[in-house]
Length: 412
Image (tube, rainbow, N blue to C red; front, top):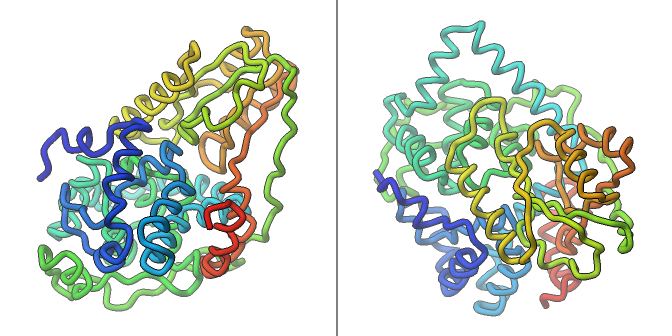
């Protein structure tokens, strides 16, 4: 197994570390990535993938910078697969923004699934066995240990893991998604929820992902050779769980009007740890705060590795903008109102908060913010505003628009 300090070596929570990781992987963004991206070499050996996801998750590294770097180093043909994989994260986030009710359905059903563990002793024991990595399947148990100890899993391993959890171990998919969300340092409410839905055959309906023994053996270089009989031979999607089909599209939230003259406070969250990219000097800023909120990911305890990375990323953001910063933790939503009101602000400015647990928390705070005459204004990045309108159906729709998106952003 990897040493205890592996996470610290790989994922230092700073913009400088993200930039260094981007620079180091640049030579591999072309054909080497295309040929090797599906191979899971094991903990500490993920040399064929960028491992930039913890930084992209918090905007310590930006999607447009990663894509521009790949294109500049390798050209559009050789870097095509790498660029598409970067786009998947933006696609999932945009898709969720078009259908935020999917997040609400996940939350409510997860609560029901967790309550079910108290009623069904056999199910509880099977879930506990899986989460402890004691299933007797060496491949699955190894992935559990890597996830818990490092906060990371190769994307192919995530797909195999979810498929085995759902179809071979026959466990509720939302409990598996929650297990990931509680342990993945790069865990994102859209990518995590929709990734599990994709494996379950709920995102692309009727097309579940099947983990197969030959595929695991091939793409782990025979580190693991599962017995075919240990994996589900027939995989049927879970679309019967949602017979009504996907919810209708809802309009994307429109950019808000920012009043540069109102006394304002700046709120930094892990959703975007590069506030310096926005024109802060134009604001009438009277105070700044970081808001730790990763503990909101689940009703259960979130891994300390996640909170440690979030804390470091927020601290790094505060240092870079060179403002005196208060450290807040998302507890009672009224605490946010009290802080802003005490500072004398009538406007809270923050980078965009997408659908997920932090947005839920801010929505709870909204009535008291309104009562206090304090407006929450979110600043959206051009990248999101350009990609998300195309994220209404399958990924292919976004894939077709990649040249247009990059031209609009000014990359090509």
